[in-house]
Length: 128
Image (cartoon, rainbow, N blue to C red; front, top):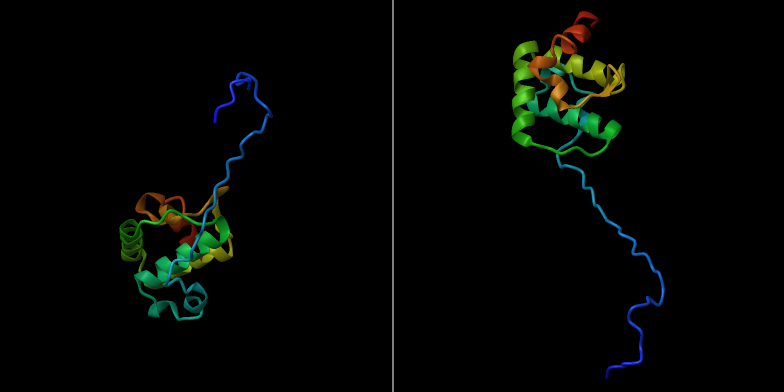
């Protein structure tokens, strides 16, 4: 039933809507950085190093947008340039000594690209 006596031009109350968003973050399976740290670096493979790096990045800087193909390419190339033992040593120093920060910027997977070597990996490797 319609009430024609109601003035629809005047709002009855000024309720402001509140927008909320719920985000659920689930850990990526297979990230076992705490186990991998205890292993001899020569026993690591590329996925162990990737898991270590990404778990440390996420632990310090929060969840990251992940691209499995990009991560695999970066880490395999990094190991190809440095060898597994040196690559693991560089990654460990980046997160244990420098606490996931390099030149006042958070370390991400991209820091292990070839273009960053002169400013990141080479500097750390010289100090090992």
